[in-house]
Length: 181
Ligand SMILES: Cc1cc2nc3c(=O)[nH]c(=O)nc-3n(C[C@H](O)[C@H](O)[C@H](O)COP(=O)(O)O)c2cc1C
Image 1 (tube, rainbow, N blue to C red):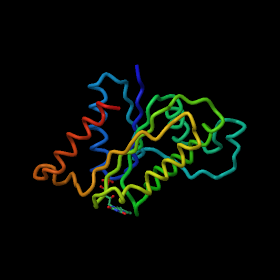
Image 2: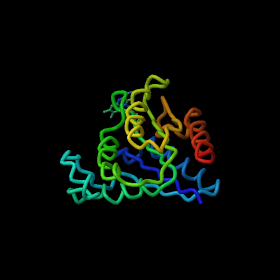
Image 3: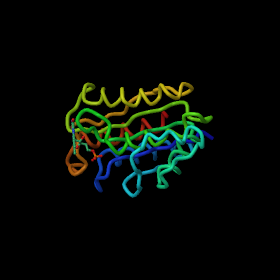
Image 4: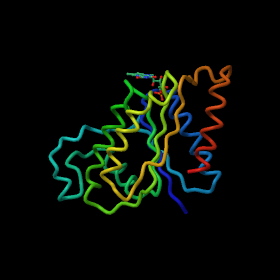
């Protein structure tokens, strides 16, 4: 069965991006995939120190939650990285997690399709383009994988869910996105 890993990076308790990602995860489960959902909110993920010890030892000198998450990344078929847009970029939390996947660089890895889910105050392709390019840089270093697409929720706020038609539509779209992973 296809294993799909979601990594959600917003630290906000009422996170727009995590809400939509959980909808997508439900959709993926409905489609019969094996789904795992990791949020960085309750995790400790330190900055990569650039020592490159991991390229020989295949493990990181920093002992925190990133190591187990990186192993989950290695062993999933499909990855969905979830981020709020911060200054037209990936969140720092997600970028830090991608850097901490450096022990995977010399290893065999299973993942092939890699998706990005974003939310942002503004709507439009240009809002998430730079973030998507950032993720594409990471994917380029794992050449058996490919950038498979973006789900973006622009101009929505889950605080308004009861009255916001756009959010309801985004929720349905996210569910469908998950079914099609
Ligand atoms: C530091 C910071 C930078 C942001 N930069 C942008 C931005 O460049 N463009 C944008 O449309 N929204 C920006 N936003 C708004 C968030 O992307 C938006 O509220 C998003 O839905 C938050 O997702 P979350 O609830 O999952 O954290 C920014 C928010 C923060 C806190």
